[in-house]
Length: 462
Image 1 (cartoon, helix red, strand yellow):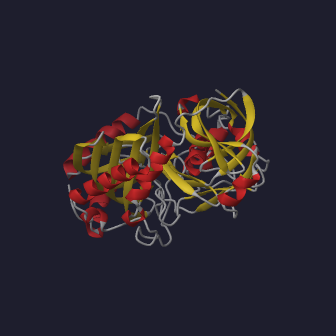
Image 2 (tube, rainbow, N blue to C red):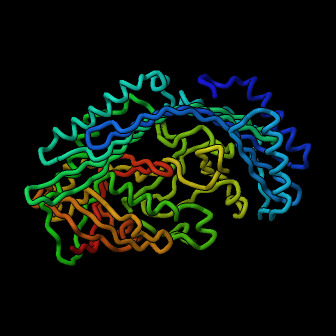
């Protein structure tokens, strides 16, 4: 394990040996992915810090292509030369029995100038120097803010803090060489609130930033408490179609459900809502959707993807019209005229890259939410979604539990809880009638951003 950056000379020497071993053993092309980093995880449960764990990791993943197109992947956390050489030998023997990829896998060549993590605003050198005691203080500050926001908040049931730094190097036999450093601070809260009748709401809130300066502990705790307390004593609603206001974090979760349909391999297999719909109207005209792997200070921002393709901004849906889907090198090779969009996602040296989103977001509108909501006679403002397993990413059908407040001309009328929202993701996309200016982000397998969305005609039942 190392506590400092790997030098270019170190990696050049190491990767040259690895690539030479692969080629000498019969590979026609090879790739070396090296990752090192450290992290701190703190868990608070019902007022007590239950665990504090600091860890480091280091490892290498090696991908190679044999004659005939068979592909192998091996990895190890033991980067001693003899250990890596043994892993390569075993991997090549195993890959010789495998099936060829169709079309054959290729690697990108010599890149143009690549931006650094510092230039992209994804590396915070102060985060690694912050003592654990200061991190615990920030955890406690979130807890205090949640408890002080509303007297009905009983406790912060669980608060998980994670921070870490990562350094990545990638080199292949086609000439690509790239490196970046990035940091992450991620926290998740679950807050329990209860009313006088013993009814309880457990609400979740999470934030993630590459820079520590973006984190406001008091705001995080207060927001978690708001989501838990607002639906208390909530009413059920009779089955009906209503206007629904999706708060930004809820809209971002809905976007996450939709994301698999934007991947080229799903479209090619006919397992996407958008298969064969390039150029068609798939959302309301007020909706523009982009995926930007080079977004400044984005949680999923990197200068290049897991294969070495430079990241960039991609326009996917323009004023409701589907313009493009996301590609890695393999999916692009299957489609005449297509090229990788820099969406080969890689989070660990233990796995090869897979096609995925980076920073996917619905672009915010220009009208403040405070101006939009008073124009709506009545609506269900959704603050919490549960039971995410009730979404079918292939058909778009969904049925999820929800809670929040009923609003009339923008003002709260009564809380709502114990209801179900159902319909189809395509219906949501096409029935959006207003887009707010309040973009927020959620972090999962990728990052998802959305502003407040107003959707007409969704089915709700209690």
